[in-house]
Image (cartoon, rainbow over the protein chains, first blue to last red):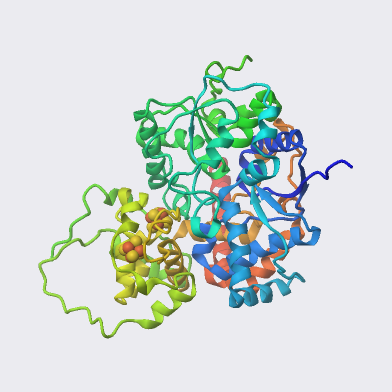
Length: 306
Length: 239
Ligand code: SF4
Ligand code: SF4
Protein backbone atom coordinates (compact mmCIF):
# COMPACT_ATOMS: atom_id res chain seq x y z
CA UNK A 1 0.00 0.00 0.00
CA UNK A 2 1.25 3.47 -0.84
CA UNK A 3 2.30 5.54 2.15
CA UNK A 4 -0.21 8.21 3.07
CA UNK A 5 0.88 11.69 2.06
CA UNK A 6 1.54 13.94 5.02
CA UNK A 7 -0.99 16.81 5.18
CA UNK A 8 -0.69 20.13 6.98
CA UNK A 9 -3.07 22.99 7.52
CA UNK A 10 -1.28 25.89 5.89
CA UNK A 11 -1.25 28.96 8.10
CA UNK A 12 -0.38 31.94 5.90
CA UNK A 13 -0.47 34.82 8.37
CA UNK A 14 -0.30 38.39 7.02
CA UNK A 15 3.10 39.21 5.50
CA UNK A 16 3.43 36.19 3.18
CA UNK A 17 0.03 36.36 1.44
CA UNK A 18 -0.31 40.15 1.51
CA UNK A 19 3.25 41.39 0.81
CA UNK A 20 5.51 38.49 -0.25
CA UNK A 21 3.20 36.17 -2.21
CA UNK A 22 6.23 34.66 -3.99
CA UNK A 23 6.94 32.82 -0.72
CA UNK A 24 3.42 31.34 -0.74
CA UNK A 25 3.82 30.21 -4.34
CA UNK A 26 7.31 28.77 -3.79
CA UNK A 27 6.02 26.90 -0.74
CA UNK A 28 3.21 25.35 -2.77
CA UNK A 29 5.74 24.17 -5.36
CA UNK A 30 8.22 22.79 -2.84
CA UNK A 31 5.65 20.93 -0.72
CA UNK A 32 4.10 19.42 -3.86
CA UNK A 33 7.55 18.31 -5.03
CA UNK A 34 8.08 16.61 -1.69
CA UNK A 35 4.68 14.86 -1.72
CA UNK A 36 3.25 16.83 1.16
CA UNK A 37 -0.26 18.34 1.08
CA UNK A 38 -1.10 21.86 2.17
CA UNK A 39 -4.71 22.45 3.19
CA UNK A 40 -6.38 25.86 3.21
CA UNK A 41 -7.28 27.37 6.59
CA UNK A 42 -10.41 29.20 5.57
CA UNK A 43 -11.07 32.27 7.67
CA UNK A 44 -7.72 32.25 9.49
CA UNK A 45 -6.65 35.67 10.73
CA UNK A 46 -3.53 37.43 11.96
CA UNK A 47 -1.70 34.98 14.24
CA UNK A 48 -1.75 37.70 16.03
CA UNK A 49 1.83 39.01 16.11
CA UNK A 50 3.29 37.68 19.39
CA UNK A 51 5.58 40.56 20.33
CA UNK A 52 2.89 43.06 19.38
CA UNK A 53 -0.38 41.65 20.70
CA UNK A 54 1.33 39.59 23.37
CA UNK A 55 2.76 42.88 24.60
CA UNK A 56 -0.64 44.59 24.69
CA UNK A 57 -2.92 42.02 26.26
CA UNK A 58 -1.91 38.40 26.77
CA UNK A 59 -5.44 37.00 27.04
CA UNK A 60 -6.64 38.66 23.83
CA UNK A 61 -3.47 37.53 22.06
CA UNK A 62 -4.01 33.94 23.19
CA UNK A 63 -7.72 34.07 22.31
CA UNK A 64 -7.17 35.16 18.70
CA UNK A 65 -4.33 32.64 18.32
CA UNK A 66 -6.52 29.90 19.83
CA UNK A 67 -9.28 30.74 17.37
CA UNK A 68 -6.81 30.00 14.57
CA UNK A 69 -5.86 26.74 16.27
CA UNK A 70 -9.50 25.65 16.46
CA UNK A 71 -9.79 25.86 12.65
CA UNK A 72 -7.13 23.16 12.38
CA UNK A 73 -8.49 21.20 15.33
CA UNK A 74 -11.76 20.77 13.45
CA UNK A 75 -9.94 19.02 10.60
CA UNK A 76 -7.48 17.14 12.75
CA UNK A 77 -4.25 17.86 10.89
CA UNK A 78 -1.18 19.66 12.22
CA UNK A 79 -0.53 23.26 11.22
CA UNK A 80 2.52 24.40 9.33
CA UNK A 81 3.58 27.98 8.86
CA UNK A 82 6.55 29.65 7.22
CA UNK A 83 6.69 32.65 9.54
CA UNK A 84 8.67 32.76 12.79
CA UNK A 85 6.15 35.21 14.26
CA UNK A 86 3.11 33.14 13.33
CA UNK A 87 4.91 30.06 14.57
CA UNK A 88 5.60 31.77 17.89
CA UNK A 89 2.00 32.87 18.34
CA UNK A 90 0.48 29.54 17.41
CA UNK A 91 3.07 27.28 19.03
CA UNK A 92 3.41 29.35 22.20
CA UNK A 93 -0.33 29.79 22.69
CA UNK A 94 -0.88 26.08 22.05
CA UNK A 95 1.78 25.32 24.68
CA UNK A 96 0.67 27.91 27.21
CA UNK A 97 -2.98 26.95 26.90
CA UNK A 98 -2.08 23.34 27.60
CA UNK A 99 -0.07 24.30 30.69
CA UNK A 100 -1.98 27.25 32.16
CA UNK A 101 -5.44 26.36 33.39
CA UNK A 102 -6.35 29.95 34.22
CA UNK A 103 -5.39 31.23 30.78
CA UNK A 104 -7.28 28.42 29.12
CA UNK A 105 -10.45 29.22 31.04
CA UNK A 106 -10.21 32.90 30.14
CA UNK A 107 -9.56 32.10 26.49
CA UNK A 108 -12.39 29.60 26.22
CA UNK A 109 -14.74 32.16 27.74
CA UNK A 110 -13.85 34.48 24.87
CA UNK A 111 -14.12 31.73 22.29
CA UNK A 112 -17.56 30.75 23.60
CA UNK A 113 -18.81 34.04 22.12
CA UNK A 114 -18.22 32.60 18.66
CA UNK A 115 -19.11 29.00 19.42
CA UNK A 116 -15.55 27.71 19.47
CA UNK A 117 -13.51 25.90 22.09
CA UNK A 118 -9.78 25.27 22.36
CA UNK A 119 -9.12 21.56 22.80
CA UNK A 120 -5.36 21.32 22.45
CA UNK A 121 -5.55 18.41 20.03
CA UNK A 122 -3.14 19.42 17.27
CA UNK A 123 0.54 20.22 16.84
CA UNK A 124 1.99 23.38 15.35
CA UNK A 125 5.00 23.10 13.05
CA UNK A 126 7.18 25.45 11.06
CA UNK A 127 8.08 24.79 7.41
CA UNK A 128 11.55 24.03 8.76
CA UNK A 129 10.08 21.15 10.81
CA UNK A 130 7.96 19.91 7.92
CA UNK A 131 10.95 19.98 5.58
CA UNK A 132 13.58 18.65 7.99
CA UNK A 133 11.56 16.17 10.03
CA UNK A 134 8.66 15.12 7.82
CA UNK A 135 10.18 15.21 4.33
CA UNK A 136 13.75 14.75 5.55
CA UNK A 137 17.09 15.76 4.06
CA UNK A 138 17.62 12.59 1.98
CA UNK A 139 14.37 13.18 0.11
CA UNK A 140 15.16 16.87 -0.33
CA UNK A 141 18.66 16.11 -1.63
CA UNK A 142 17.24 13.65 -4.14
CA UNK A 143 14.95 16.36 -5.48
CA UNK A 144 17.75 18.90 -6.13
CA UNK A 145 18.20 19.28 -9.88
CA UNK A 146 19.78 22.72 -9.89
CA UNK A 147 22.36 22.79 -7.09
CA UNK A 148 23.34 26.39 -6.36
CA UNK A 149 27.04 25.62 -6.61
CA UNK A 150 29.32 28.55 -5.92
CA UNK A 151 26.59 30.78 -4.51
CA UNK A 152 27.79 32.36 -1.26
CA UNK A 153 24.91 32.07 1.19
CA UNK A 154 24.54 33.86 4.52
CA UNK A 155 21.80 32.80 6.92
CA UNK A 156 19.40 34.68 9.10
CA UNK A 157 17.62 32.01 11.17
CA UNK A 158 15.70 34.60 13.19
CA UNK A 159 14.45 34.11 16.71
CA UNK A 160 11.10 32.53 17.30
CA UNK A 161 11.45 29.13 15.74
CA UNK A 162 14.23 28.06 18.10
CA UNK A 163 13.84 30.37 21.10
CA UNK A 164 13.18 30.03 23.95
CA UNK A 165 15.25 26.90 23.49
CA UNK A 166 14.33 25.04 26.67
CA UNK A 167 10.63 25.22 25.92
CA UNK A 168 10.70 24.84 22.14
CA UNK A 169 13.44 22.16 22.09
CA UNK A 170 14.09 22.71 18.40
CA UNK A 171 17.79 23.39 18.17
CA UNK A 172 20.72 24.67 20.23
CA UNK A 173 20.03 28.38 19.83
CA UNK A 174 23.66 29.39 20.45
CA UNK A 175 24.95 27.07 17.72
CA UNK A 176 21.98 26.05 15.62
CA UNK A 177 22.53 23.55 12.81
CA UNK A 178 19.13 22.43 11.52
CA UNK A 179 18.27 25.50 9.46
CA UNK A 180 21.82 25.54 8.15
CA UNK A 181 21.70 21.91 7.02
CA UNK A 182 18.39 22.53 5.30
CA UNK A 183 19.77 25.51 3.39
CA UNK A 184 23.04 23.76 2.57
CA UNK A 185 21.04 21.01 0.88
CA UNK A 186 20.50 23.54 -1.92
CA UNK A 187 24.18 23.27 -2.77
CA UNK A 188 24.96 26.87 -1.85
CA UNK A 189 28.05 27.58 0.23
CA UNK A 190 27.42 28.65 3.83
CA UNK A 191 29.12 31.91 4.87
CA UNK A 192 29.30 32.51 8.62
CA UNK A 193 29.28 36.03 10.05
CA UNK A 194 29.48 37.32 13.60
CA UNK A 195 25.96 38.67 13.99
CA UNK A 196 24.18 35.81 12.24
CA UNK A 197 22.11 34.99 15.30
CA UNK A 198 20.95 38.45 16.33
CA UNK A 199 17.43 39.60 15.67
CA UNK A 200 16.57 41.40 12.38
CA UNK A 201 15.14 44.25 14.45
CA UNK A 202 11.54 44.03 13.30
CA UNK A 203 10.04 42.05 16.18
CA UNK A 204 8.45 43.00 19.46
CA UNK A 205 6.51 45.89 17.93
CA UNK A 206 9.79 47.78 17.48
CA UNK A 207 9.40 48.17 13.71
CA UNK A 208 5.91 49.55 14.30
CA UNK A 209 7.05 51.92 17.05
CA UNK A 210 10.27 53.16 15.51
CA UNK A 211 11.33 51.91 12.12
CA UNK A 212 14.67 53.69 12.31
CA UNK A 213 15.77 51.85 15.43
CA UNK A 214 14.63 48.55 13.96
CA UNK A 215 16.77 49.26 10.90
CA UNK A 216 19.80 49.79 13.15
CA UNK A 217 19.64 46.10 13.99
CA UNK A 218 19.42 45.24 10.30
CA UNK A 219 22.29 47.51 9.44
CA UNK A 220 24.42 45.94 12.16
CA UNK A 221 23.78 42.54 10.59
CA UNK A 222 24.63 43.79 7.10
CA UNK A 223 27.86 45.39 8.31
CA UNK A 224 28.82 42.24 10.15
CA UNK A 225 28.19 40.26 6.96
CA UNK A 226 30.24 42.73 4.93
CA UNK A 227 33.09 42.29 7.43
CA UNK A 228 32.93 38.55 6.81
CA UNK A 229 33.49 39.11 3.11
CA UNK A 230 29.87 39.51 2.04
CA UNK A 231 27.50 37.02 0.45
CA UNK A 232 25.41 36.60 -2.69
CA UNK A 233 22.21 35.78 -0.86
CA UNK A 234 20.74 35.89 2.63
CA UNK A 235 18.28 33.13 3.46
CA UNK A 236 15.68 33.29 6.22
CA UNK A 237 12.77 31.09 7.34
CA UNK A 238 10.50 34.08 8.03
CA UNK A 239 8.66 36.56 5.78
CA UNK A 240 8.78 39.32 8.40
CA UNK A 241 12.57 38.97 8.66
CA UNK A 242 12.55 38.83 4.84
CA UNK A 243 10.65 42.10 4.70
CA UNK A 244 13.04 43.70 7.18
CA UNK A 245 16.16 42.48 5.33
CA UNK A 246 14.78 43.05 1.82
CA UNK A 247 12.63 46.19 1.96
CA UNK A 248 14.86 47.28 4.83
CA UNK A 249 17.69 47.90 2.36
CA UNK A 250 15.56 50.53 0.62
CA UNK A 251 14.63 52.06 3.96
CA UNK A 252 18.24 52.10 5.20
CA UNK A 253 19.20 53.96 2.06
CA UNK A 254 16.47 56.48 2.79
CA UNK A 255 17.21 56.97 6.49
CA UNK A 256 20.98 56.47 6.64
CA UNK A 257 22.09 57.14 3.08
CA UNK A 258 23.91 53.84 2.87
CA UNK A 259 23.29 51.43 0.04
CA UNK A 260 23.37 47.69 0.52
CA UNK A 261 22.48 45.28 -2.26
CA UNK A 262 21.73 41.77 -1.05
CA UNK A 263 19.32 39.30 -2.60
CA UNK A 264 17.24 37.95 0.26
CA UNK A 265 15.17 34.80 0.04
CA UNK A 266 12.83 32.70 2.08
CA UNK A 267 14.08 29.14 2.51
CA UNK A 268 11.22 27.76 0.37
CA UNK A 269 12.24 30.13 -2.44
CA UNK A 270 15.81 28.87 -2.17
CA UNK A 271 14.61 25.27 -2.37
CA UNK A 272 12.25 26.06 -5.27
CA UNK A 273 15.25 27.33 -7.25
CA UNK A 274 17.34 24.30 -6.27
CA UNK A 275 14.46 22.03 -7.27
CA UNK A 276 14.77 23.48 -10.76
CA UNK A 277 11.85 25.90 -10.76
CA UNK A 278 12.49 29.08 -12.68
CA UNK A 279 12.34 32.30 -10.64
CA UNK A 280 9.39 33.45 -12.80
CA UNK A 281 7.42 30.41 -11.74
CA UNK A 282 7.03 31.84 -8.24
CA UNK A 283 7.82 35.50 -8.88
CA UNK A 284 11.13 35.99 -7.10
CA UNK A 285 11.36 39.38 -8.80
CA UNK A 286 8.29 40.66 -6.91
CA UNK A 287 10.21 41.13 -3.66
CA UNK A 288 9.53 44.66 -2.49
CA UNK A 289 13.20 45.62 -2.74
CA UNK A 290 13.12 45.00 -6.50
CA UNK A 291 9.67 46.55 -6.97
CA UNK A 292 10.74 49.77 -5.23
CA UNK A 293 14.24 50.02 -6.67
CA UNK A 294 13.00 48.89 -10.07
CA UNK A 295 15.83 46.38 -9.95
CA UNK A 296 16.23 42.64 -10.34
CA UNK A 297 17.87 39.79 -8.50
CA UNK A 298 21.52 39.39 -9.44
CA UNK A 299 20.85 36.51 -11.80
CA UNK A 300 24.45 36.09 -12.81
CA UNK A 301 25.63 35.64 -9.23
CA UNK A 302 22.78 33.22 -8.64
CA UNK A 303 23.89 31.25 -11.68
CA UNK A 304 20.52 31.63 -13.36
CA UNK A 305 20.11 32.37 -17.05
CA UNK A 306 17.17 34.59 -17.83
CA UNK B 1 19.24 70.03 38.27
CA UNK B 2 21.06 69.10 35.10
CA UNK B 3 19.44 66.88 32.56
CA UNK B 4 21.70 65.19 30.07
CA UNK B 5 20.60 63.71 26.83
CA UNK B 6 21.97 60.23 26.59
CA UNK B 7 24.70 61.04 24.13
CA UNK B 8 24.13 59.88 20.61
CA UNK B 9 21.03 58.00 21.57
CA UNK B 10 18.41 60.59 22.13
CA UNK B 11 17.80 61.05 18.44
CA UNK B 12 16.34 57.58 18.60
CA UNK B 13 13.77 58.45 21.15
CA UNK B 14 11.02 59.50 18.82
CA UNK B 15 8.62 56.96 20.24
CA UNK B 16 6.03 59.68 20.25
CA UNK B 17 2.78 58.63 21.75
CA UNK B 18 -0.08 60.57 20.28
CA UNK B 19 -3.34 61.47 21.89
CA UNK B 20 -6.59 59.96 20.70
CA UNK B 21 -9.04 61.31 23.19
CA UNK B 22 -9.00 61.67 26.93
CA UNK B 23 -7.91 58.18 27.80
CA UNK B 24 -4.47 58.75 26.35
CA UNK B 25 -3.53 62.03 27.97
CA UNK B 26 -1.21 60.32 30.37
CA UNK B 27 0.84 59.06 27.47
CA UNK B 28 1.64 62.53 26.29
CA UNK B 29 2.73 63.70 29.69
CA UNK B 30 4.95 60.70 30.01
CA UNK B 31 6.51 61.27 26.63
CA UNK B 32 7.21 64.91 27.29
CA UNK B 33 9.00 63.91 30.44
CA UNK B 34 10.92 60.99 29.10
CA UNK B 35 12.09 62.45 25.83
CA UNK B 36 15.32 63.22 27.59
CA UNK B 37 16.83 60.69 29.87
CA UNK B 38 18.05 61.95 33.20
CA UNK B 39 21.33 60.16 33.57
CA UNK B 40 22.72 61.90 36.65
CA UNK B 41 21.76 64.70 38.98
CA UNK B 42 23.58 66.49 41.78
CA UNK B 43 20.59 66.29 44.08
CA UNK B 44 20.22 64.27 47.21
CA UNK B 45 17.39 61.82 46.91
CA UNK B 46 15.27 60.01 49.44
CA UNK B 47 16.36 56.39 49.65
CA UNK B 48 14.29 53.78 47.88
CA UNK B 49 12.46 51.98 50.62
CA UNK B 50 13.07 48.31 49.90
CA UNK B 51 10.80 47.29 52.76
CA UNK B 52 7.87 48.96 51.09
CA UNK B 53 7.90 47.72 47.51
CA UNK B 54 4.85 47.53 45.29
CA UNK B 55 4.17 43.82 45.69
CA UNK B 56 0.99 44.00 43.68
CA UNK B 57 3.00 45.11 40.64
CA UNK B 58 5.39 42.19 41.07
CA UNK B 59 2.52 39.77 41.57
CA UNK B 60 0.89 40.79 38.27
CA UNK B 61 4.23 40.37 36.48
CA UNK B 62 4.60 36.92 38.01
CA UNK B 63 1.16 35.94 36.85
CA UNK B 64 1.51 37.33 33.33
CA UNK B 65 4.62 35.42 32.34
CA UNK B 66 7.46 36.18 34.73
CA UNK B 67 7.03 33.80 37.68
CA UNK B 68 10.74 33.84 38.51
CA UNK B 69 11.36 37.59 38.49
CA UNK B 70 12.24 37.54 42.19
CA UNK B 71 15.12 35.17 41.46
CA UNK B 72 17.05 37.80 39.51
CA UNK B 73 20.49 38.36 41.05
CA UNK B 74 21.44 41.14 38.63
CA UNK B 75 24.26 39.31 36.87
CA UNK B 76 23.62 41.22 33.64
CA UNK B 77 23.76 38.23 31.28
CA UNK B 78 20.48 39.49 29.83
CA UNK B 79 21.66 42.99 28.97
CA UNK B 80 24.96 41.59 27.76
CA UNK B 81 23.06 39.44 25.25
CA UNK B 82 20.61 42.11 24.25
CA UNK B 83 20.85 43.63 20.74
CA UNK B 84 18.47 46.40 21.77
CA UNK B 85 20.66 47.21 24.74
CA UNK B 86 23.62 47.71 22.40
CA UNK B 87 21.69 50.08 20.12
CA UNK B 88 19.32 52.02 22.37
CA UNK B 89 18.98 53.32 25.90
CA UNK B 90 16.99 50.25 26.91
CA UNK B 91 18.57 47.97 29.51
CA UNK B 92 16.63 44.90 30.44
CA UNK B 93 18.55 44.27 33.67
CA UNK B 94 17.76 47.82 34.81
CA UNK B 95 14.09 47.38 33.98
CA UNK B 96 13.95 44.22 36.06
CA UNK B 97 15.78 45.79 39.00
CA UNK B 98 13.49 48.81 38.91
CA UNK B 99 10.45 46.56 38.85
CA UNK B 100 11.79 44.64 41.85
CA UNK B 101 12.33 47.91 43.69
CA UNK B 102 8.72 48.77 43.05
CA UNK B 103 9.42 51.74 40.80
CA UNK B 104 6.32 50.90 38.81
CA UNK B 105 5.51 54.29 37.39
CA UNK B 106 9.06 54.81 36.11
CA UNK B 107 9.11 51.38 34.51
CA UNK B 108 5.75 51.48 32.76
CA UNK B 109 6.00 55.05 31.51
CA UNK B 110 9.45 54.70 29.97
CA UNK B 111 9.51 54.48 26.16
CA UNK B 112 12.61 52.28 26.62
CA UNK B 113 10.28 49.45 27.46
CA UNK B 114 9.25 49.31 23.79
CA UNK B 115 12.73 48.77 22.33
CA UNK B 116 12.84 45.07 23.21
CA UNK B 117 12.32 43.05 20.02
CA UNK B 118 11.36 39.94 22.04
CA UNK B 119 14.25 38.01 20.50
CA UNK B 120 14.60 35.78 23.59
CA UNK B 121 18.41 35.90 23.52
CA UNK B 122 18.33 36.94 27.18
CA UNK B 123 15.86 34.21 28.10
CA UNK B 124 18.16 31.57 26.64
CA UNK B 125 21.05 32.83 28.78
CA UNK B 126 19.56 33.92 32.09
CA UNK B 127 21.09 31.62 34.74
CA UNK B 128 18.16 32.22 37.08
CA UNK B 129 15.33 31.35 34.65
CA UNK B 130 13.87 34.80 35.08
CA UNK B 131 12.62 34.74 31.46
CA UNK B 132 13.37 38.44 31.01
CA UNK B 133 11.53 38.56 27.66
CA UNK B 134 8.30 37.42 29.24
CA UNK B 135 8.86 39.81 32.14
CA UNK B 136 9.15 42.67 29.65
CA UNK B 137 5.98 41.53 27.89
CA UNK B 138 4.15 41.30 31.22
CA UNK B 139 5.26 44.83 32.15
CA UNK B 140 4.10 46.05 28.73
CA UNK B 141 0.67 44.53 29.42
CA UNK B 142 0.51 46.55 32.62
CA UNK B 143 1.75 49.70 30.85
CA UNK B 144 -0.98 49.38 28.21
CA UNK B 145 -3.64 48.73 30.84
CA UNK B 146 -2.61 51.93 32.59
CA UNK B 147 -2.83 54.03 29.45
CA UNK B 148 0.78 53.98 28.25
CA UNK B 149 0.20 52.76 24.73
CA UNK B 150 2.16 54.25 21.87
CA UNK B 151 0.27 55.81 18.96
CA UNK B 152 1.59 53.47 16.24
CA UNK B 153 0.78 50.49 18.45
CA UNK B 154 -2.78 51.66 18.90
CA UNK B 155 -3.02 51.92 15.13
CA UNK B 156 -1.82 48.39 14.46
CA UNK B 157 -4.04 47.01 17.23
CA UNK B 158 -7.01 48.75 15.62
CA UNK B 159 -6.06 47.21 12.26
CA UNK B 160 -6.48 43.72 13.63
CA UNK B 161 -9.84 44.58 15.16
CA UNK B 162 -10.96 46.17 11.89
CA UNK B 163 -9.48 43.80 9.29
CA UNK B 164 -8.40 40.75 11.34
CA UNK B 165 -4.90 41.24 9.91
CA UNK B 166 -2.12 43.47 11.21
CA UNK B 167 -0.79 43.71 7.66
CA UNK B 168 -3.99 43.69 5.60
CA UNK B 169 -4.62 43.18 1.89
CA UNK B 170 -5.66 46.81 1.72
CA UNK B 171 -4.74 47.82 -1.81
CA UNK B 172 -5.48 46.47 -5.23
CA UNK B 173 -1.77 46.49 -5.96
CA UNK B 174 -1.24 43.78 -3.33
CA UNK B 175 -3.85 41.63 -5.04
CA UNK B 176 -2.12 42.26 -8.35
CA UNK B 177 1.17 41.14 -6.85
CA UNK B 178 -0.50 37.84 -5.93
CA UNK B 179 -1.84 37.40 -9.44
CA UNK B 180 1.59 38.18 -10.83
CA UNK B 181 3.13 35.22 -9.01
CA UNK B 182 0.32 32.93 -10.13
CA UNK B 183 -1.93 32.91 -7.06
CA UNK B 184 -5.58 33.78 -6.54
CA UNK B 185 -5.99 37.54 -5.92
CA UNK B 186 -7.43 36.93 -2.46
CA UNK B 187 -6.03 34.27 -0.10
CA UNK B 188 -8.35 31.94 1.85
CA UNK B 189 -7.72 33.83 5.11
CA UNK B 190 -9.90 36.56 6.65
CA UNK B 191 -9.22 38.94 3.75
CA UNK B 192 -11.95 37.29 1.72
CA UNK B 193 -14.09 36.10 4.60
CA UNK B 194 -15.93 38.89 6.43
CA UNK B 195 -17.42 36.39 8.88
CA UNK B 196 -13.93 35.80 10.23
CA UNK B 197 -13.53 39.53 10.88
CA UNK B 198 -16.87 39.45 12.74
CA UNK B 199 -15.54 36.67 14.93
CA UNK B 200 -12.47 38.73 15.81
CA UNK B 201 -14.70 41.71 16.65
CA UNK B 202 -16.72 39.52 19.00
CA UNK B 203 -13.57 38.24 20.74
CA UNK B 204 -12.02 41.68 21.13
CA UNK B 205 -15.28 43.12 22.44
CA UNK B 206 -15.69 40.33 24.97
CA UNK B 207 -12.08 40.44 26.15
CA UNK B 208 -12.22 44.18 26.68
CA UNK B 209 -9.50 44.75 24.09
CA UNK B 210 -11.54 47.26 22.08
CA UNK B 211 -12.01 49.37 25.16
CA UNK B 212 -8.39 48.92 26.18
CA UNK B 213 -7.09 50.39 22.94
CA UNK B 214 -9.87 52.98 22.63
CA UNK B 215 -11.04 51.46 19.36
CA UNK B 216 -14.30 53.37 18.85
CA UNK B 217 -12.69 56.76 19.55
CA UNK B 218 -9.74 55.91 17.35
CA UNK B 219 -11.90 54.92 14.39
CA UNK B 220 -14.05 58.02 14.82
CA UNK B 221 -10.97 60.22 14.80
CA UNK B 222 -9.65 58.42 11.72
CA UNK B 223 -12.94 58.96 9.90
CA UNK B 224 -13.00 62.63 10.75
CA UNK B 225 -9.43 62.99 9.60
CA UNK B 226 -10.24 61.33 6.28
CA UNK B 227 -13.32 63.52 5.86
CA UNK B 228 -11.34 66.66 6.51
CA UNK B 229 -8.69 65.60 4.04
CA UNK B 230 -11.30 64.91 1.37
CA UNK B 231 -12.88 68.32 1.97
CA UNK B 232 -9.52 70.04 1.72
CA UNK B 233 -8.85 68.28 -1.54
CA UNK B 234 -12.22 69.35 -2.87
CA UNK B 235 -11.57 72.95 -1.89
CA UNK B 236 -8.19 72.85 -3.57
CA UNK B 237 -9.74 71.58 -6.77
CA UNK B 238 -12.24 74.45 -6.79
CA UNK B 239 -9.44 76.97 -6.55
S1 SF4 C 1 20.31 37.34 33.27
FE1 SF4 C 1 18.65 36.80 34.67
S2 SF4 C 1 19.54 36.86 36.73
FE2 SF4 C 1 20.97 37.92 35.37
S3 SF4 C 1 20.35 40.09 35.53
FE3 SF4 C 1 19.25 39.25 33.77
S4 SF4 C 1 17.29 38.56 34.61
FE4 SF4 C 1 18.66 38.88 36.36
S1 SF4 D 1 14.25 39.61 24.27
FE1 SF4 D 1 14.31 41.84 24.48
S2 SF4 D 1 15.44 42.19 26.36
FE2 SF4 D 1 15.86 40.08 25.77
S3 SF4 D 1 17.74 40.16 24.54
FE3 SF4 D 1 16.04 40.32 23.10
S4 SF4 D 1 15.67 42.51 22.82
FE4 SF4 D 1 16.91 42.26 24.68
